[in-house]
Image (cartoon, rainbow, N blue to C red; front, side, top):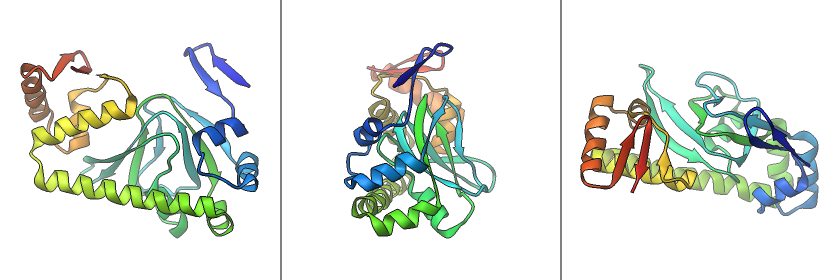
Length: 223
């Protein structure tokens, strides 16, 4: 059954087998599906909602079913560095590590748009990893994917100029959201790329002059 959120005009779904199998098709064992449906809870996240905060303990494993989650690292001065996006069918590798080691979170995760995720209590992480091959493969693939993305992030910082990093950021954001119109402020982009608003504004205007983007109020359209 699906519920319509009258206030926001968004469709708010319920956790069921079709939703779970449709998003996490790699989960093969029927018993695993049954257990997730039994102990998991579907959480609805408005845009801007904080899933994980630096310094807090993580008590559940997030399985994203809808939307986009931006994962960031924070330095000692409170500045943020964008790491990667989470999309439907994925979970966060850093979260898995913190859960297994019972450590405080070293990242901040924010919903970039209306999102949904299944929260699973952390005690099931070890159980399912040992019990179900498909869940173990899911965890291992998560680590591999995030490791490759982190290497790409390091490479971009070390070897790419800021204008190249900016264009890469915009293109990746478009690919994640499926939308050529990105609702972002210059400051938000600067925070994600560990730069300043003045630098980002100057580079965005250069991209606009080149005909690659069109700037609006808190909006960037990729042409």
